[in-house]
Every structure is written in C-alpha cells, then in structure tokens.
Image: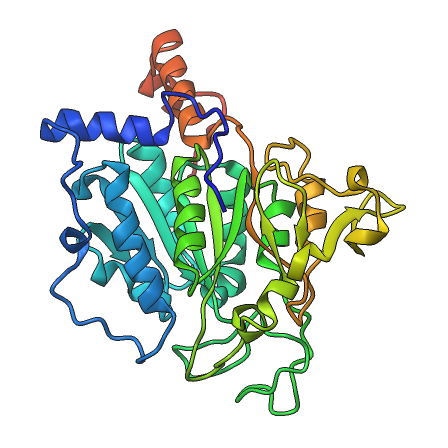
Amino acid sequence: MTTIDLGMPADGPIADAIAASVEAHGEKRSDLKAKDLKTDQEVRWCPGCGDYVILNAVQSFLPSLGIAREDMVIVSGIGCSSRFPYYMNTYGMHSIHGRAPAIATGLAASRPDLSVWVVTGDGDALSIGGNHLIHTLRRNVNLKILLFNNRIYGLTKGQYSPTSEVGKVTKSTPMGSLDHPFNPVSLALGADATFVGRAMDSDRKGLTDVLRQAAEHQGTALVEIYQNCNIFNDGAFDLLKDPATGRQWTIPLVHGEPLVFGPDGASCVVRDEFGGLRIAETNQVAAEDIVVHDVTRTDPSYAFALSRLSGQDLRYTPMGVFRAVQKPTYDRMMADQLEQARTSSPADLGAVLAGGDTWTVQ
C-alpha cells in the first residue's frame, strides 16, 4: 500500500497538535524515539499474542508524527487490548467496559490540542460499548479508534464475541454460536464514519500505513485490526496470512488503483447489475469495467459495498483504507457554537434560574 494525499488542510489535527506541542515545549519533538514511548511495566499478554506486534508498531509509528508524548492520550476499555495504556509512556486511562469512546469524546472535545486515541476490542466495542461506538462515529469527534478484532473473548477465557462466526464452538456456545456476527467495517460505514480502515497485526508495513493515514485524518478514524489470539482462537486469520492462500483472498485497497488481486492478478472487482460490487475473473471483463478504488467518495455506499465482499470465512477480504472524507468535526463545531454564544448573548444565570420553565414545589 502507499500513503495517499487527500488534500488535508494545513490546519488539520496533526498540524494543530504539533503547533500546540511546539508552543508548550519549545520545539517540534522530532527527537522522540520508539523507546521513549515504552514504560517500565511488564508487558503481560500471552506469549505469541498479536497484541505485541500492534504495540510495537504503534510505538514505532507515533514518534514520526512529531507530537510530544505529553500531548498524546490513549483511552481503553476492558479486555486484553485495553492494557495498552500501561505500556505507552503517554497520558492514558484504563476506563470501564465499553465506555472508552464516551470518555475520549469528552477529552477530545474539551482539549483539541491533544492527540486522542482509543484502544478497544471486538467484545468491548461491539457488545456493551456498541452505542458509544456508533455515536462517536456519527458525531465525527476528532479521535482515532483502534479496534482489535480476534473474533473471541480472550480476557474472560474464550467465549464467543460479536464478531465470532455462526457455528463457532466456544465455552459459552458448546453447540455452536447462533448469532450472526457484526462486520465492524460495515457497521462503521453504516454510521457514516469519515475514515474507516482495516489492517492485519502481522503486516507491519500495511498496519503502519493505515495508522498513519488515520492519524492524519481530521475527525473520527476507525481502524479494525485483525489480531490473532493464539490461546482461545489460534489461526483465526490464517487464510489471509498463509502465503499459499493470502494473495488469493486478500483485496489490497490502494487509492486510485484498479481493484485487481490474486496470483497474477487473476481476480478483480466489478459492478453488479444492482449497483453493488462483485468478484470477477480479470480476463473475462473489459479493463474499463474494473472498479478503481476511491476513498474520497462522499456517498458511503461504495465503501459499504466493498466491505460486504468478504464473508464469515474471510474469502475476498479488502485490506487498507475504505473511506477517508472530510466533514466538520464535532469538537470544532462545539467550540464555534460556544464562542458564538459567548460573544452574541452573554450568559445571565439569574435569567436562566428565573426563566419561564420553572415551578414551585410546596
């Protein structure tokens, strides 16, 4: 994948955060290294867990943003992934189950000078935290959400999760799960999220590329990260990781490039008769009929159709950035509204307390 230029404004979130960091600390923190973001806490995930790779990728990538670690905040909920703040030498909060997006919203809205990140899992974000997630996405708060998806509850020892496939045998579904799983990317696009991406824990280059584009986005960015739980759901993504099958079933998303994939580019994505998308054999269609990926389409229906190409078995899984569009952010609009109220109609507390919508209790 290659990083794309979406014409981000010079006064975007990264530029704002860097300017605030320069003002507070006197210089751009270009000297920050990955080791500076590591804490003295013992990293306590199971040996072989995909979380180690993600942690290493984030610690290596964040210094390149030029933001002081004092201006970064990581908020997590509950779950294996939510230990993340302990291992990041930034400000952070290990909050409560499912509520990380709500807490991060308050922080991002009140402190626009900070770079705010949410780390969550498929159970934390899509079960008890489902409403908080979709409302954060629709509001377009300026924060970044990393959703680790291992398709299982790991911390509570192997129950099925909102992303487990139908028929999944677990401790809580010994006869197989009856629930149809969420597709996190489809869910986010259905909530009109302005930035949605997907990456694999073991694909360091692809993960870093998507994270960078998310960081540069002004608004809410959700990145689903396929993460292997080698204890309770080992090999969940082997179809995509195995060199023998990965190229056949992975659809790389590169802005401005035709959606051609598979060994020797044998497969491609084309429009179907209903305006959706389908898979075709490249040598059976005209070159002009092959869809060219465009993350900037205002209407999310294209990106949504793209997200529906993959099924529970992971065949035909798009990887990369699905959508990246610009809309006003909630925090900026809130600040403008407060400023307008302050300058146009100064608050009169007495008038509020004695206003018409009052009553007397005897």
